[in-house]
Image 1: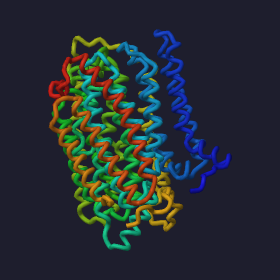
Image 2: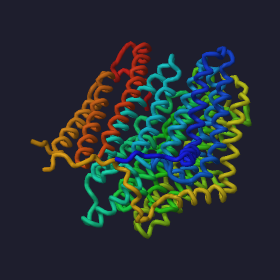
Image 3: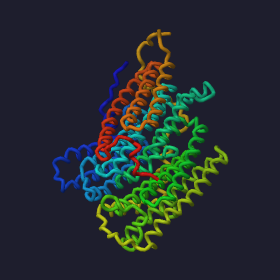
Image 4: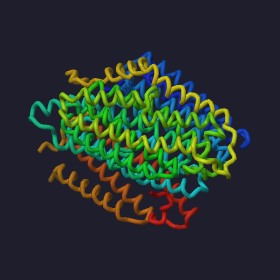
Length: 520
Length: 101
């Protein structure tokens, strides 16, 4: 065994490649250290400190982007793909923090650890986006999950918040165990936990034996269970409506957006890179899951009278649309997934932040009836909400429309490889978009045409929330009207993944135990 | 005498399956939590067995990470359970049913 020595320049390059995570963790720790010294009345300053942290992290993405390559003996891959997802995740976290500052005051739970947990969760998602190795991915996944469990239960006195935390914790850990067992199976069949090295090894075995190792396919299935839970793909979506409804609204905004983006990034790395040659097998898994996810999400949302729960079901439906693009198994498909995620995160965070405000103290006002007449009382807020709902519905000139457009285009483009089934999938997705129109438009109708409910006295929208809604709205419109730049970034991100068999097996990172003991 | 690796894998599969079954059918939140720990230990066993089969240390290193993360998860999980016990005075998950369709 040779000692691994890393030169100082290489060490610095490594640090630069994970700069966003370092910044997020440092700010998270600063928030926690400062917290006890701040008077309870001025704790909201910690929120601004955390927001500054996300801004610095966003700036530090440039530092990482200037230093592309593998960090820490190939554990982390800093490529265009990882950079793109980092930006999505950090923007979502920043908007959620802006929406939290006044929410926490309103609910009387203004504490520093809330912001610290958001930052740590974001750092975990960043690791997830860049992981080139499954142990690293597991650590990233758990960093984000464990922080989210606590955030879900942050309204300690509220029973529904307790319930959300408990359900999310139990089912989340359950899914994690499946994910881990899947990693064990892949490790067993390939002898490596590196995503790119597993690809080479699986292709070698495929060429040598003529078929895929069954253990690896079993592992992929288990990983799909674990990650399908995190991206709320059916049939692992059961927890999502309960958790999203019970969690504090700004936390829901974060949960419904950022982890989904980061987990889809990891899924792309595992499915597209490691299991590229098994595309014909996992295509069907994704196909069935996509159809189920879309129908369950849309039909579930149809019957909801609680707007927050309706949006939770809508986020299930959107996971289905993303899976449609995912099924394409081409570079175009990856670009479509990334663009969709960018658009989705902005509109979803925006929509949940509106729910945060309208909910008022104790989150009591979540029903459709409570939105009646909002268009007259708070025109700007209602206009924002309408924009987000129309974007979720997929109206042209919003990011949601182009997201769907690229997703369906990406899927259709792969029709040559997968035949008519992909066309059928796109048709099902289009039908689902139409079903979706009903429940989104219903909320808009309620806001503008229903008689005002008498007991609602509108409260002023806090400046921080205004800023967050403004950014989300501008972003949604920007992606809908001038998508070129972001889409070309998504394309170059997709291009930076080692999809084709490069033939470079790379150095084996396995630490071999010296002489084989107990020779049989 | 050497125990073949496949024996360990079967044992690990059985433990994992028991964990899944217990997770689904048990009603006490602490018992459900323990069944998750059982599943994680099944994973650890699989890793050790595979590490042995491949004659590598990677799998053994993974086990440490799983143990550490399981400990962190237990800390958070028990805190959530305590919170629930304070608010509801029950550990039965069937009584946690405020949020539903």
